[in-house]
Amino acid sequence: MSIRLTLRRIAAGAGALGAVAAATLLVASPAHAAGSSKVSVVHGIPGQPVDVYVNGKKTLDNFQPSKVAGPLDLPAGKYDIVIVKPGDPVTSPVVKVDQAAVPADANISLVAHLTADGKPTLTPFVNDTKTLAPGKARLVVRHTAAAPAVDVRAGGQPVFKNLTNPNEAKADLAAGTVSADVVLAGTSTVAIPAADVNLAEGTSTIVYAVGSAEGKTLGVVAQTITGLHGTPGSVNSGTGGTADRGPAAWTYAAAGAGLMLLLGGALVLRRGARRVVGGVRA
Amino acid sequence: MPARSSDGASPQTAAGARPGRPAAWVAVMIGAVLLAGAAVAACAQRPAPTVGAAGAAALASATPSPSGGGVPIVAGAPPPAVAAVPPARLRIGKLGVNATVNPVGVDERTGDFAVPPSVDVVGWYRYGPGLEATAGSIVIAGHVDSAQQGGGAFFKLRDLGPGDRIDVTGGDGTVHRFGVVAREIHPKTAIPLQRYFARDGAVRLTLITCGGPFDSATRHYRDNVVITAQPIAT
Image (tube, rainbow over all chains, first blue to last red; front, top):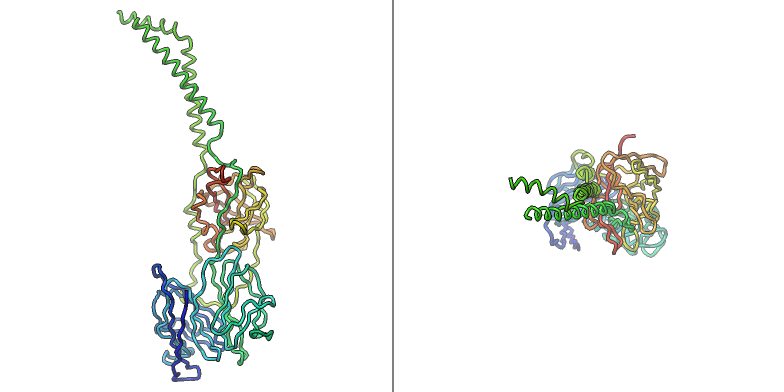
């Protein structure tokens, strides 16, 4: 599934945070019947609680930074999303998206965050919910911080290189705990210090780099999608055949002997009966 | 009168011509009894059918009580690693089973459940829930038999039925008691593995082995025997 995000920044009327963005999310329409999509909202703007309106209805009240809300079940369609400071009217948004297209049967994270140059924005990401192989976990890293390109290191080694805002990198890894940090791309200058991330089997862990390098508010927000586990192909636990429970051998023997006795006896009786008949006639 | 005389004559004639007739009657009767007995025994020996499937399905679809209206909001922190309590020993009193449980995953080559090679040892699916679980299916699979080692720990698994007790001892020494809810027989080609390996629904113990007709060409049984049990108060 491909996304093309077009952001047209329109002159903001009011307030320092009044950047207004109109985003159009174009997603290849799936061939199968349309169903609802799951939409999570991720708050990645430090220090700014917000109210979130969806199609004019307040959906999240006083939503705090670093929190993840949802998922909401939204039927495919177009949605107007407005984010305001708590209590503010929808006419003075922090950021808003008109007619954001939600495709069918998708899992989407709508992220309120800062652009590379520090302006509030909303970016939708389509989450990869493909089933994982047994024993695997998915790690997705999204650069949604006011910061330059970064490398993500696991155990000291760069695993995702030159990641820029607002892009993602991902990999399916063996489940377990990884120690990860974020450095400025191509350097060993730590932007976000190392933290242990538990990658649970059969889940996708999405880590958002958020905040501002300049404002010294860089940090991470994490979201987890569960239920992506695979199953073993099958359970094969017998090669002997001794548990194939047809009737036991003695039942066949008994049935065979019984049949022979029955037929043999009947034959003898019938022969005798013929002789009797013959005797009568004589 | 001639009729009577011929009637009177016939037993004599017959008696003279059939010295084996009483023996033949006995043979017929014994034969009939043997056949009937064999038929009854064959019916009694038929593989145990599925029982309690509705109960097992209900456990799988059980959902935690809704947390009230509104959109759920969680802290954007990765969930902490949960310390799994691996099953270490499995006891089934009715079957005389007392087996070591080893943590296993999948066979890298085939993608199948990595059933422990020893037929006396059973395997806990370590990627799924352990005894610490608050939801989902704790899966233990074991051999019904093997060509080399003979009958396995789960040779008589299909004899379990609703109400039978299963005790699982965790690696931490805690004993968890389960009561059988269902015994289900599925062809391997149609077994709902996603349900048996689910991480959601009520906590339940799922024991799996092989059963049904054996194909001596492929050395595989056609079916899986699945026992579903739910925790019972200790």
